[in-house]
Image (cartoon, rainbow, N blue to C red):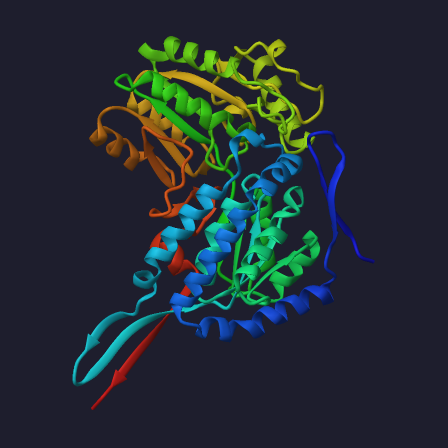
Length: 460
């Protein structure tokens, strides 16, 4: 019996979209077409693959006026923020620019006696399991370089952003990418796991929860299928005594609240040098108090609903547990039209917090942030590292050498100085601890989406 995958809109709880999940036989046919298409796609000149991918992104950008309200309906992001196309184009353009050098053979020796070199070969079929919070940005991190490198791609999106994969594939096929080189698929969890367990793919990239990452690892166990896993986060900010307080408050608050806090590298905890603590908190409270929670289709809304009531329930549970201990909430909930038990959730700042509280340890993925004073760098570093995750850390200081020294001691994938919540396509997007393994974008992204193949040619 065919199951149905549904997207329930957080705006009003209605079913916004639904699609039948592929049966195992249907999924096998999609995989078979991707494998059959791979040699032809891989043998096309690199310049041709790059050109087609870039036109595909342009076609996707032409759909932006439809995509923006569609995302608001599916996962609640306010339309005023305009979608994800800028980042999609930036990342694709950069990966296209470095493709030739990143995929070029590494020549060890070329003499009268020997040719010794290392080539990069595509894995074959790359399976991308994309999340709902940034459905286009997260997918493009793998889709664009995978196709450029000569892989074929099968894309599976989260049910909350059910239509995003269809749009991406339509844009790329309209641009001229062969139908079977890039395909969208709707799958339930059981069929997804069985496909991975049966070695259907040359590479699997998953962005999502730690629980989901463990399920992917279990499915792939013993198959030797390479995996890319970007999982949870609990990213810290540290504001030092020489920081620009206004810039720090504005950036860190935005990084904590944008997309209703549903950002992979959003700021979830802030540590502030004790002399600045009171003034920093005052600035943060003022900024957040001016947000407008409401229907994401309204241009005046700056904070939409969370993508699903169960996500909001977890944030409420963490916040309630903290306040029942010693935490003090500073945002007046009367300013925000929160629906009790629903997806609309008032933003919150908590002080008088500590690391015995889940809100300072567990991923919140919502519009709440705890702020603590610290005595010095050592205390800040210890607190930043007191976490199961390691995606990014945001350091605020006027001293780059100090930031670099602190960065060397932080267990994280990316160290920011005087910015936050940004993905630089020239740098490897990676994490440590329960945030996962692997790396996207940059030259390393290309290397993860290909395998080395060595040539040792003796001429005489």
